[in-house]
Amino acid sequence: MNISNIKKEFPIFDNKVHNNDLVYLDSANSSQKPRVVVDRIYDFYTKEFSNVGRSVHYLAVAATNLYENTRKSVQKFINAKDANEIVFTKGATEAINLVASTFGQNHLEEGDEVLLTELEHHSNYVPWHYLRKSKGIKIEFAEINEDGEVTLESIEKKITPKTKIIGVTHLSNVTGAILPIKEIVQLAHSKNIPVLVDGCQGAPHLKLDMQDLDCDFYAISCHKMYGPTGLGILYAKKKWLEELPPYQGGGGMIGEVKKDGITYGDLPNKYEAGTMATAQVIAFDESIKFLNKIGMDNIIKHEKELIEYGQEILRKNNSVKLIGNPKSKGSVLSFTIDGIHPHDIATILDEDGVAIRAGHHCCQILHDKLDIAASARASLGVYNTKDDLDKLNSSINKCKKIFELK
Amino acid sequence: MNLKELYQEIILDHGKNPRNLRKTENFNKDAKGHNPLCGDKVHIYLKLNENKKVEDISFEGEGCAISMASASIMTDLLRGKEENDVKEIVNDFLEMIKEKDEIKTNLLKDDEKTKLMCLSGVKQYPMRVKCATLSWHTLTSAIDNFQNEINTENMET
Image 1 (cartoon, each protein chain N blue to C red):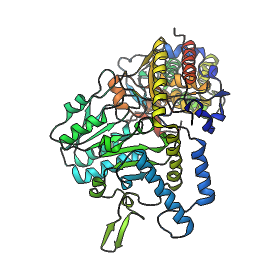
Image 2: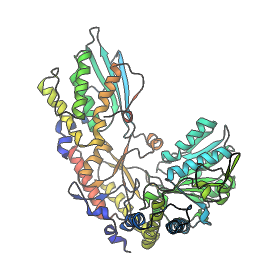
Image 3: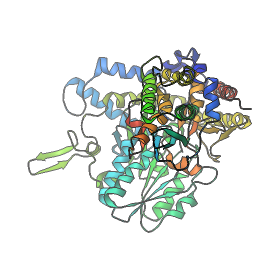
Image 4: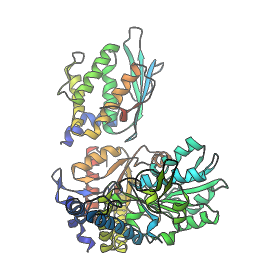
C-alpha cells in the first residue's frame, strides 16, 4: 500500500467542508478511519454479530474467535510476550485509571510519591489526583526544558526513596517531544520503580516493542490509531495483572460466585467485566492490518518528512511561534500567533476546510508552565501531505490579513 | 456560515483594543468567569453609586477576539445605566444570542443595538457562543453577588 496515495482509503475525504477539500490536521485528537475499518463494523453487525465469551452457539464461537484474534494481533503489533498481557478497555483513559486505581490499592500509602511529567495529558494526572485525595499520596512533576522536552536527567532529579511509580507520556501531544522511554524504564527499574507509559500519541506514530521498552504498563487509544472510538488497550506485564486486584466487577470476570465469596477469572477476563466493545475490538484488527500494510517504518519516515517541512514553513512565517523544539519530535505542530487567539485562528482556518485544534489540549499544567492560556495545534496522520501543510500556512496568512498582522 | 459576519470590523477593533480593560477603583461588586474549554478568563468590576447606577464598569482578562470584544462593548454600553436596566439589557442580549433575531429593549439607542448585533454572528458557530456570553454571565453574577466563579460548562449558553 503506497502512502502517497493513502487519502483515497479514507471515505471522509470524499466530503467537502465549507465547499473546500478537507485538510484534516487534528489526528492527535482523533484520527480518521480507513474504509476497511468502517466496513468491518458494518459487516460484523450485519452478518456475524453475537456477544463473546459466553454462549456456545455458532455466532458466539465465531465472534469470540474474532475478538481473541485481535488480542493476538495487538500482542504481535506491540511485541508483547503474552496475549494475556493485552487488556481491552473503553479507552486509554480507562487504561490509566485502571492502573492508578489497582496499583494505588495495593502499593500506595500516605506520603508515597507518584512521579509524572509536566507534559502529561490530564488523563495521566487526574486519576492519580484521586489518590492524592483518598490516600494522601504526593504527585511530583518532572520539569520540561526550554525545548519542551523531558530528559532522563529531569526524571532522575525528582526520584526519591518515596517514589512508587512513574507515569510518562511517550510522545507529547503538545510539543511533540518523544521521551527516552527505554532509558527512563532502565533507570526506574534500577530503583525498583515500575513505569506506566501513556502511549496515546506513541502508538500511532512510533514502532512499539514492549519487550524492548520493558515498561510495566502501556496505555493505547485505538481511535487515534485509525480504529473505532470506545476502545483502548492496556498492556501490562503479566506479573502485574496477576498481582493487582480487578478494576471493575461484573459478568465475565469471575471464577466462582457464591453467597459467601467470589473468585476472579483468569487473565485477561479478570480485567474485562461486562460486555466489551465487541464490534470495535473486531474492527480494530483491520486498523492493525492497515498499519502493517503501509509499514510503521514507512509511516515514521513519511511523518518525519512532514514534521520537518511543517516546522520549516511555519518558522519562515512571521508572527508564528512554534511551541517546543525537541530534538526527537513527532506528529504535532503546536503554535501561537502574537495578536490572534488560537480560537480565532481555528475558526478562520475552518472556513478553508483546515481542521486544527485550539485550546490547552488537556494539558493545562504545560500551558501554565509556558505561560500561555491556549495554543493552536496542527497534528498529523498517515493521510497528510505537504500540500496540506501549504494550505495550513496559507490559511494562517489569511488569519493575519483579517487581523491586519504583517 | 460567513466569516465576515463573525469578524466584523467593530469586533476586530474592540478585540484588539478593548475599552475598559482595567480595574475600577473602589469597585463594590465583582465576579470572575472562566471558560475551561478554551481558557478564556474574565474578571468584571462594577461600581454602583447610591442610586444603584453604574458609575464605572471595567474588566480584566484574556481571551479570543470575540470574548474580548463582547466584554469591551458590554462595558461601554452599560456605564450610567441603573442596576435593574443592566439586568434587562443583559437578559435581552443573552436571549438574542440564544434564539431571538434582534435586541428588543428600549433601554438602548439604535446605534447601541447595532453594536450588540455585531456579536450575533456567533450564532452560526455554536462552539463560539460561550466566548460571546462569558462576560455577560459574569456581570450577572457580580450584580447578584453570586459567590462561585462562573463556569461556562455549567450553563446553557
